Image (cartoon, rainbow, N blue to C red; front, side, top):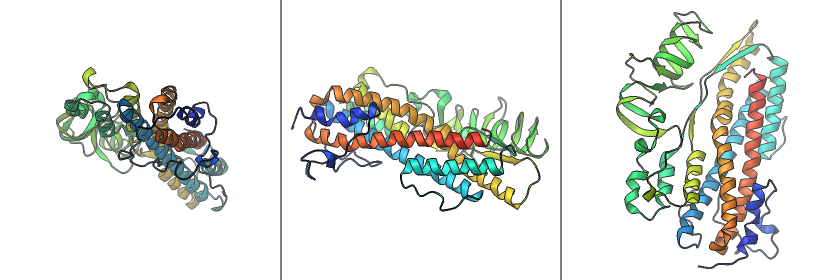
Length: 395
């Protein structure tokens, strides 16, 4: 293994990210050549086959950290792009110039399009729409975490324990396809209506035993403030005595075999024997969080006033695009914010233990540091721009 204390200097770009100072590129380092610059770190890529030229415990720990960085950077790039596209669609559908934004930088482009969307909403719809939506439903990628954790320990016998999602997930947070009756919550979405006898967090289609925001109690097609007896485009919390065959994911109460189990919270730690170094496990959690899967929520948009072709088109655009913005803000955004803090702490830990790493690992920390710095900018733009649009529609 090649070691070099110059790694401490090469680690500075990653450390600067934690302090909010932009990282430098490899081409900015005096005397750097293509041979010296890292080509193995790629945003969003699977880095499991990369040899970082490290031996011992640090090999798995550094590999997990670089994978978490690549996953985080890939997810923040996708999130800011998705929000920008949704804002662009809303802005243009409400009358903005389709060529109104010239920015090419992801964060700046998204901010500009969302500002235009807010301006159009205030001009055309302010005070005239009521939006009702459920929070998006997100599940952590437990298999990613378990596979990563298996590399953090030398105990081969731990693989089964690490991958036992049902044992490592709090019962109330355990979710999946239920081959039997669902006694918890049946998770639908904007695109999937599930049978419901209970409280529907979303759009109730059927009988509402309470006030319905759209339609009559017997023929409801909106938010129901009582129990829903019919179908729910959202999450249906099943009543205690009801028997429901859930077509979506059943969370917190499958009376039968649970297929493809997922967890809506972080997995509980394995036994002490199966725990690797804290830095390694922390990176595995970060990867699982970055690869969380979120279901687009059901969104109801009601126009208050005299409707027209133009207003109908505007409402349709909000119904189509607001779920994407909600996923970015309420779902992935919150998870990624927690990720950013964890990765910042891990970066500081790696800088302090830099002497154990190879020259290649140090060189590859440069593009990783750049990616984290860009990710922080993209995440801030995602959250801020999403918030501005949701505020403009009264959410």
